[in-house]
Image (tube, rainbow over all chains, first blue to last red; front, side, top):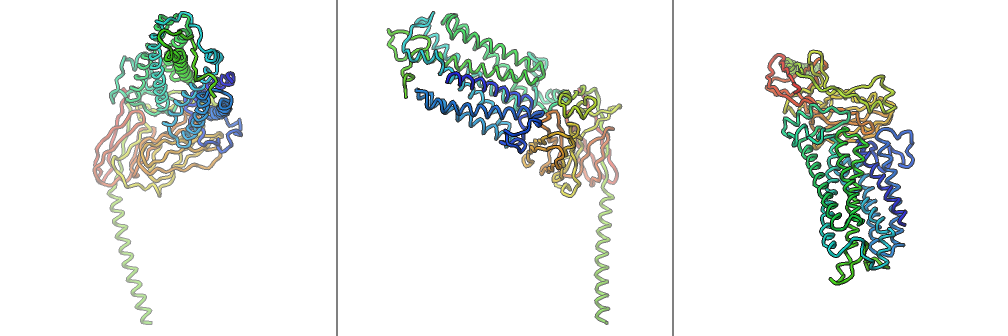
Length: 354
Length: 248
């Protein structure tokens, strides 16, 4: 089952990329009907007609159908085979989410609503997080630790580290929530269909803070020459992009501090420390991709990579928190003089719960 | 016999009255038309516009590239050798409720060579806009009005399909028409509630015909350069309103 979930997670990641390409190529409305495709059954649409924007939108729909099938199988499998009640409900939640995603995607087309596109994009990220979490919860290490009960303390782990992990856990949670908000900001920006609101980086129209007066915005629009049907930019869109840049900086600092604290308090060999190092690498890469998106005038592949690394950043924060929570949770039932549990402490509710 | 003569005489009298009434109406109409005048003008551009951008994505699409020998470019700024500015929409501000769109001939927006022709278009409320696919490939016609009462559409149009017909009930400037299959295709259609509008030609000239006497504000609106206004008064002869836009 774990391998099946891993395959589903990878396929979901590809679907995220496919959806990103649809928006990056402004192809979201290239197939005006749903669930059919230009009047054809979706699965019978002639390959010769997969042209232009239709290619991206149609492949996205086909991939989504595949994910729907995988998720349905997964949900049924979990329901009948996993002894943990909470896992069965998570499988059910995955099924509900993927079904909702399908409907949202279809309604976005039939109602021609950009706002639904933003919800569709944000929910896709949450669905990906859920599938990756299911992969973690079905991993051998997670299961083994749970079945083994209490285990030896993790290398380098001391009683003094536990409060640090508690505090760190909240910092990671806050940073992760901020990452999700940043993703929503990004989705909002992408669905304005106004191209790049600010064409340069790290400056903004040559300044640290751009002029957003009516005259300045009119001047920017006079000089914007694009081959895509872009809407004129507005002062609000310019400010939105500036907020996106500032939040990126705050996230970066949050992850840097998380990594430093983990390094000092948990030790460099602790898996959670290593995960924060990986997290920092992702965020640094994400900032680089954000800059490259601007420098490349929003090249579709670069912008889509920016979406994907954002998704990985979100997943990493959530999984870090889940592992930390799993490590700390048994302590709430241990007397102050009791044994310190290991990296994945025992959770009585997870063992043989039918 | 006498009755027949009487009927004939009454009939002649009725005919005469009808003829006089008709003649009076005709005289009044001619008089009114004679008092209407045109608003004419030339629009120029000062300064150098940014360079147009080649439609590189168009040439990367085999269906569309086959229809072009060279790479076409955008034409946001249609500027003549002496600065004449084309594709400026000129209209009378706040003149509403005068639409003759329902009886006006339809206007055609053509998809040819994976580009919209013309790029700037104007119609009246209730007037039919025919969108034609002259290409040998699929297009989708996606218009995105923002004024409540004007309906958004996204319709597939296969090669050789009949023209798609649209009408708009409310005035609105620069409604975007685009094709999501070929995202470089776009046009802007402005809708007016009167017949008093024009689009400048390549020589920057416009004529708004048969404007009734009165005071008006003439608006010149360019997709990139924004709008300018000028107050005029129409009496018995043509009125000139020239505009100059500047790229800074």
